Picture 1 (tube, rainbow, N blue to C red):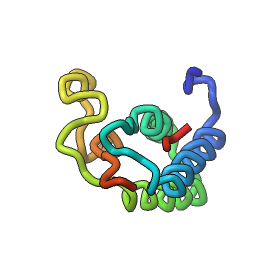
Picture 2 (cartoon, rainbow, N blue to C red; picture 1 turned 90 degrees about the horizontal axis):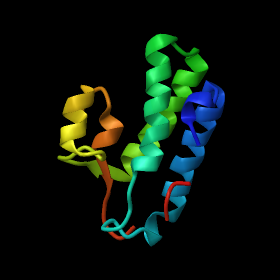
Picture 3 (tube, helix red, strand yellow; picture 1 turned 180 degrees about the vertical axis):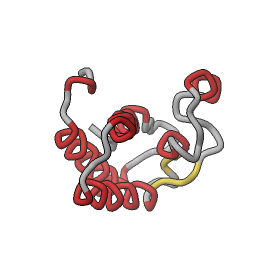
Amino acid sequence: MSLERVNLPALVALWARQVDDLVRELDRIDPARHDLVECVAVRHEIARRLRVRPASAETRDLLREFDDAFRAVTAESPACAYGNDRAAAEGWTSQREWYFWRRVTGRQSSCT
């Protein structure tokens, strides 16, 4: 599915569902096999849209809540989910695209 065709409210709802799924399934996740790329692709598309057109205060509050929940069940990673070479090529940074530098920790299934 191309995320470019999905409107912002639907993307925010999808991010919320993915984070909720991750939180609920955390105890069944094998960190060695869990890949967050699909999940963080949604968050990245949201960020890209917000750089062009700022969101309402309500949307920003919702994103902060979902982002905080995502941070709570993941840990910082030294490597970008897509690889550091691609991050450099795309101009991504761990401060601006923080969601790419996260990983599932411990034996805590996936975002869908």
